[in-house]
Length: 290
Image (tube, rainbow, N blue to C red; front, side):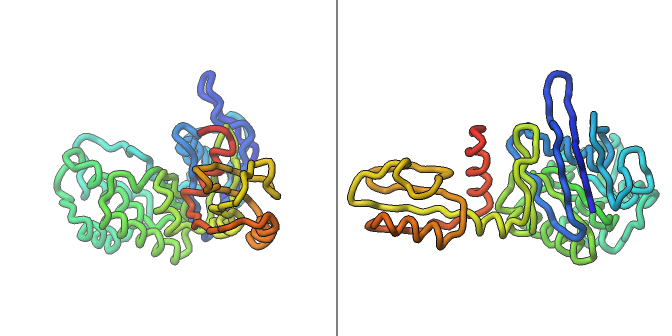
């Protein structure tokens, strides 16, 4: 289990975290989301021990991560723009990771073939997507207990994204815990069971994606008289009007909210489907960031 308690981190005058708490259960695939600059990359680096928090502590299975090689052997962090030496090839990348992990050549070769990569060519000559692919292949081949990914969908074409998601699921099925920071919220919804939303220097909300979507409803309603937000029988996360059509987003038990709304005798009530991207927008909007 990954546990972070009371994390504070600032860079010069910018406070990134001011007492953030994070828990990621073993065996989960967790999506880490937030607007640009919210601190997703910083949090991943603190969790894996690349950065030291100014205050607070991160532990994995009860052991601190910072400056702890024993714990880091169970982790693989793939940065948004991974560093590599000028002459590094795919074969040299394999040899490098073999010095630190129980590297599976079969898995590596399988993804290299799927991604159609030439391991003899310098990685610097690869396209952005191909660079991402070769490091993803290495990450899967290392079979880490904890895999931390920063914007790993970026630069991947649709077929590569599909293989990437399948690889994450395969790794998860073998018992690994995965944290993925990404702006591709619909991609995260496909594979993640839980999420962490960071905003305004703190963890704003976290939990199971399914539970979060079950606890929020979006409705389009038409009344025969003018209705304002103050007339609504429950608190609205969002209330907008276009002509006679009112769009309402609210949090709570669906049937209870519908019963209250039906008490106002609307002409039409139409439930609009909510996905994880909609949920993210509403949560961030509620914090007056957008």
